[in-house]
Figure 1 (cartoon, rainbow, N blue to C red):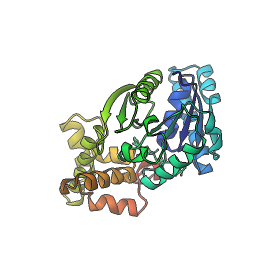
Figure 2: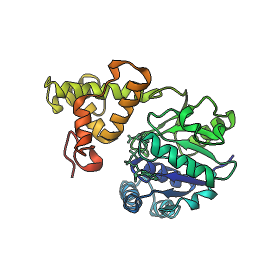
Figure 3: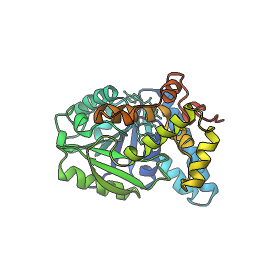
Figure 4: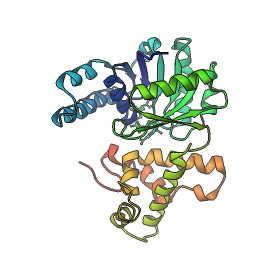
Amino acid sequence: MKIEALGIIGAGQMGSGIAQVSAAAGIDVIIYDLNASSVERMVSSIELNLDRLVAKDKISWQDRDGTLARIVGTTDLAPLAGADFIIEAATEDVRIKQSILQDVGQIRKAECIIASNTSSVSITKLAATLKDAPNFIGMHFFNPVPAMGLVEIIRGIRTSDHAVAVTIEFAKTIGKTPILVNNSPGFVVNRVLVPMINEAIFLLQEGVASKEAIDAAMTMGANHPLGPLKLADLIGLDTCLAIMTVLHRDFGDSKYRPAKLLQEMVDAGQLGRKTSQGFYTYQ
Ligand code: NAD
């Protein structure tokens, strides 16, 4: 099944990135967000990214204009009814996602596959919101989407072989490398990565080392390209907290308890790059 029209729900950092790479691969994209300001930000951030690629001679002006022309932002869900494939990339909150999926279930084409880009919510649980659970799947992209090669394809207990095959093919079409994972809290990457970030926040909270020292320890001592606290700012501290909360609850193991400092920073609205303030300050 060839995907010609893609619907995306949520025009935040992930939705924008997925829109950019899909449109660059020649797919028409309609991206819906309930906040008009997110839609406006999405368009300007994609423009900025594409302008940088032109400046670096990675794409032509024609590619830039063609990619932009294939992306339509909307604050109305109805136009997504024509999509062959829909990706939900809204805020990491199970109730928000369930409510979106109920609405999408009312408007989508019968053969449309629906994927969630959730970082941590059970795909099997989200699928139960839909009448057509076999056509529901997890498609977990990484941030920033244009730069990151991997997509975890998550199979819920009722996901069909057809949905898996279409999603793997779609991931390849937009230049990503898919790996197939069975539904499990945190899937693969976040089950390893986010507890490491949480542990770095514990180190900071306990005064074991400064944020700069913790990040330097992991970039130079473990050869990570980015320190864990800078990475937390990039992912979004709200998303990190949501993932730790799910791991803690679903495994029932205290080793996954979120650091108090992480909770406090989220309560303070210091969510990282997207709010210009996290462990570091951004302009
Ligand atoms: P974000 O905060 O940048 O964007 C979320 C967007 O969802 C916002 O624009 C918000 O207005 C919109 N939204 C909220 N409720 C909505 C609704 N009912 N209908 C339509 N839009 C709605 O968040 P993000 O970082 O882009 O994350 C989005 C999803 O992607 C989350 O599930 C997150 O766990 C997942 N994810 C994030 C990362 C990451 O590194 N940030 C990586 C992989 C997956």
